Each structure stands twice: as C-alpha cells, then as structure tokens.
Amino acid sequence: SGLVTKKSSAANSRQSRHSFHNDSSSTTEPIIRKGTHARVKAVDRAIDAFLSLPLSSASKDTKDTKEQTVCRQVVVLGAGRDTTYLRYRFGKDAILLDDNDNVRWYEVDHPSIIQQKAQSWLPSCIPDGYDYSCDMNEDGGGNSHVVTIAAAQKGEKNDERSSISNYHLIGHDLRSSPASLFETLTHPKHGYDRSMPTLFVLECVMMYLPNEASSDLLRHLAESSLPCSKSSYDPFVAVVIYDPIPSNDRFGQLMIENLQRAGITSRKGQRSVDDDDATSQLSLEKTRTLSDQLTKLAQSGFDVAVGCDMMNAYDHGAISMDDRRRAARCEMLDELEEFNLLMKHYCLVVGVSSKGERSDGNGASENRSVGFRLCSVGEGSLMGF
Image 1 (cartoon, rainbow, N blue to C red):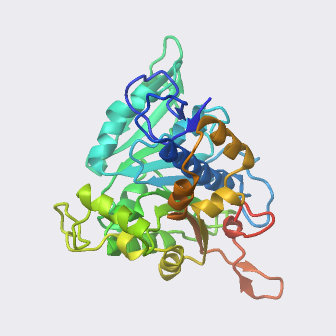
Image 2 (image 1 turned 135 degrees about the vertical axis):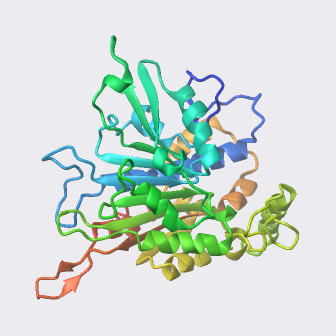
C-alpha cells in the first residue's frame, strides 16, 4: 500500500498519514522516499527491540503479567510532526492498545512546535471513532501537555472518564539545559521515572544542535537512570540515533553546503540563527564519521554503543528482506549508485547506559542489564547488527 513515513500534514486528515504511494505527481524524488522508508524501518526496529525486551535480566517476560502498570518509557526528542505513537496505537501492527498501556510515551520539541502539534496537527490525525483531548500543564509554563485519545462513547465527554493518559507532549528547546527538560519530564503530571527502562529516539536531531549542546544532552541522558530498590526492573537508558555522517569527501561537503544555503550554518561552519550559541559549530560538522558518533557516545558516559552506516543496515539485516522488497515494488530506482552513496552518508547508532548491579554468584557485583541486548552483534542481534 506504500512506504511508511514519519511525517504528516494537516490536509486529508482522515486518510492514511503514514504512507507514500507510487504517485508520479509527487514532488519528492524516489531516492528520497526510499531513503526515508529505510530510516523509518530502522528506527522502528530499535523501538520494537526495546519494547520486546524482558523487564529484567532474570526474566524472559516482556510484559508485567501481574498488573498492567507502566514499565517502559519512550522519549522522542525533536519530535516535530512525528506520528510514530499514532502508528503504534492505530497502525496495522499496533502494539500500544490504549492510553493505559504499559508504555509511557513522550514527544519533546521546541515549545512553539509542541503548541502547534497539540492544537492542530494531532487533532487532525485522530482516526474516526476516537475523541481527542489535551490537558495543558500550567506548572510547566503552558509548554507541556497530557494528551488523551480515547474511544468515543455516546453520552460521555472525555472529562467524564477516569482514564490516565500515558502520552505526553513536552515543550523544550534542546539547545537549553537538559536539567530543565528532566524537571518537566519528572513533574507529577508527566510522571517520568528515572528507574524505568527508557529509550530516547533522535532522528536527524543531533546534526542541528551546537556540538557542545549535543554532548551535554548525551551526558545527561547517560546519567539519567537511577537504581530503585523497590523496582524489579533493570534501570537503563538506551538511545537510538539516526544522523548524517558527512565524512570528509565531496558528497559530505555537498551536504554541508546544502545546510549553508538553507541558512542552518554559515560559510565558516557557524550557526546563522539568532541565539546565544551562534559561534558554536553544529554537531554535524564535528561528528563526521561513524567512529566519531560511537566515540561521542562513549565519552558521554554510555557503557556500550554499536552502529553502522545505512547502506550496511539496508544490506545486512537491520532492514528486513520483506521491507526491502516492498520498497523496491513501490519505488523503482535507476540511480542505484546515488542511492548507495546517500545511504553510506547516514548512520544508525544504538547506545546503552545502565546503573544496575547484580551479583555474579560469588559475592561480586556485575552489571548484566537486559538493556545491553540492544547492542548485541552477530547472530541473534535484536537490531540486525
């Protein structure tokens, strides 16, 4: 039926918002659509892998069978018009059953973007038969919201129902202090739990941040998990990063020049936007290779990090053969060399930081967090690395 995409528009609000169709009138080049499909599928695989993990290294169960309480968190940073939550709620292979499912989902972006999303974009995306309500958190300066999407019931209004939503929109400028972000996340109305397994998703986000701001953000993420004696969960934080790796070749230089023309960077590699970090190089300009990406995660405090360029992800398992065949049927490419070159200049990286300690049976403590399985390589790799 088409290729999956992360973006949607306000038009055609009741139609499918997550697919490309093989439409000759589209202004987006086939090579870009096919690349976007690969990007979505790769990040979806990371989310699926995270949601499939058992809750602790001593358990094989992926769900809390005793009670349906929240036991995982997903935080999408720089979410924009991302519709992943809606796809996981209402898509063909939906695994989030309702607002009270055991996954708490956060989307973070600049306050102005979050305001538009809460008031305009999301309401236009809700499928028929569901009611949408958005409760603003006044304590957060009006920049954060709790969203409820519930099945419509005759004779009842949303505010008459006793449901607690696990879908949150957080307004925060990622160039600002990460400490303020966690203050908002941990507000009682949003309920972020530092002792809970958490996945942070960053799709083409790090590239736009000043390098020091991006490093500061990663350091805070790596240190954000806290062990809890009352919890049976392994406390860990995982990140999945999809970002360009311009390298030092001509193709990579063209990527930088395109950002210059768009006003994102100046000719000297400085930000051209009007903010306090105008003299700071972007992360994209300082993190040019896959090795740079992995080193940055390690230096930021992540215990383990693995990754590959997107061409390797496409060829060697991170993108399933079924998805590749589906993409090939939808988008016939003549420019295979250009597609290969483009994919080699993007990467998929996964990092894990854990504060859990468990005994090795001889009195010594050893960190065997279940989260490290996200970074496994070879046969049985959850990510296909």
